[in-house]
Amino acid sequence: MPNYSYSNLQIKTSNAAEVRDALNVCDIGSAKILARSDNDWVSVYPFLTEDDFAYLKMVAEKLSARLDVPVFGFIVPNAEEFKYVIYRNGSLLDEFHSQLKQSDKKHSNTGGNPDVVLPLCKAGTKKQELKALLRPTAEAAPDPKAGDKMACQFAELLGIARVQICTGFNHLKWAQAGR
Image (cartoon, rainbow, N blue to C red; front, side):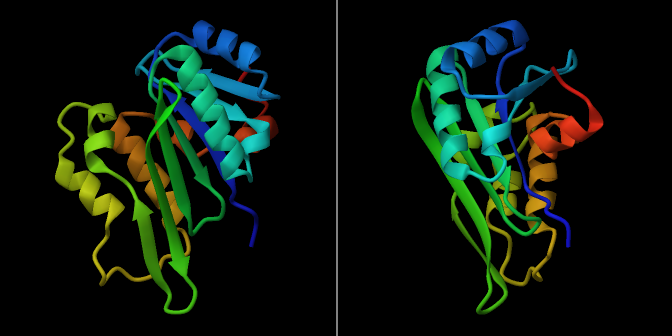
């Protein structure tokens, strides 16, 4: 099975130039940036966060402190797992981990506060939608692509193109995309 690991940062701003400047000041290493005119999110794909959740958290913290806007860090370390952090002003607001327990093949989710995520979602998103995503019912069968699917569902709720969240530095490098 190929490695499906990817990570990215979604920054709640439409000012890509300001994000680029912050990346340079924070000196986080090689990164690619994507901004779309149809939403207020700038996507950053730092190379060093691809397999390193701790580094992703550090980068999100630094950028949120520098930019004074919410920074959502996403990582799918394998197709089954999904993690995120949300920082603002350098402070951790929320953290979520979804993982498959190998012993009983059930998902064990930790963290995830719908009240923190909801203000970042597109208009019309209901708190119940977030609760259902963060805490699936016990009857949900194990899914080998659950992490990837959660990332795509978050993209929809945040009003971000799926490709922005379900992509990482290496994907963009191979596609020769981003700046």
